[in-house]
Amino acid sequence: MNEGNQAVGVPDYLFNANIEWDVPFAPALTLTGRVVHTGEQAANITNTLLLETWTRFDIGARYVTLVGSRPLTLRVGVDNVTNEAYWASALKDVVSRGYIDDCSRYRGGPQSGVVDCFRGHQGVRTK
Image (cartoon, rainbow, N blue to C red; front, side, top):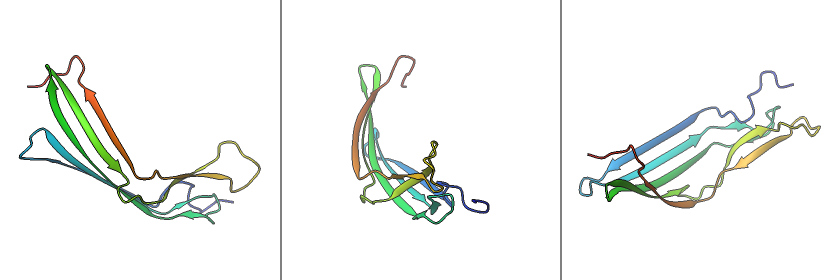
């Protein structure tokens, strides 16, 4: 039935690129960016339903400082800056419900922000 067809949830290609820029006039500040581009992928075993190609852009910043003698990293970011609506992936259901083309599809997340911090633990030193 699926001989010669594309596997469910396996895109034709993937392209991921991350970039970081250490800001010269603010040595503890790093700006980050990421692009995720995913090719078309089958959403069922007969390849009659396809998920379209999609691209997502993320941006962020990281600031590292010392609190006492321990490093503290503060991060902010926005994922899916353009608020692109997309189907991230498809997956053949593990439990068959009796349908030949019974697959789950996963929608990509909407635009979202993140703020977090990480405090270094013992065994991590800075010069």
